[in-house]
Image 1 (cartoon, helix red, strand yellow):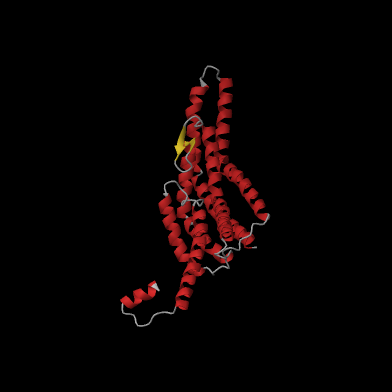
Image 2 (cartoon, rainbow, N blue to C red):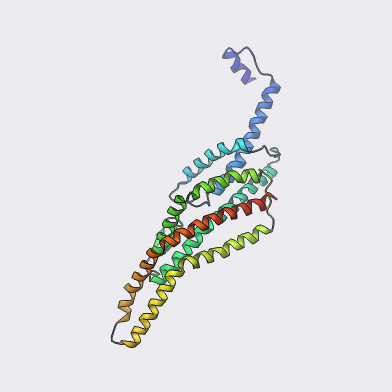
Length: 280
């Protein structure tokens, strides 16, 4: 009635019937329900995705970007059969979408977990274990090498268009996993365990050249200390270990870039596997 009164005030001669108005309101309500489910999946994903989950990206900016992506994705999403009158059922569907976002977000972020672990190993072996600084990304104390490795990995990720891969994965997840239809089979647990194992593999592969170089330097210093007892090996060894570690890091930087390329390619396979499992 209120809408009809407004139309008469504007001089409209054709007033929609109450039935048509009710259908329009019902359609709008369904679209808002779909929009909220899409938004909640995208927001939970962006809260864990590399680059987007960085502490430098503020929460309002993350929410705004999620809203923009949701507006773009909603026209491509089919209306799910969700009973909006059942609050408990709708909350269950929303929780399912959050779980989908968390699983995919963790799978995308495991690469950087391994790189941070590798930076910690390298920094400790180089003698930076007592020189900890606050990492603005994780809000945790860590060595300087962790920050250096994290920044380089983030730059390589952007250069290799990894962020476009993540946005593409978000859009394709709605095509493969329609709203309110995601399942969580037991195979996902196996994939998550495998990803946790891959974190240690990535850390060892990245830190191996520096660890070997530092160990060989310490062995050489030990032999030197036995042959020349008068020499203060501790004073010589500390700057020498740091120098060898930094030199090895600079030499192996092209290898690190190539390894990041392979990791991003494997990330595409991991996302496809998880999406296939959750699609049922």
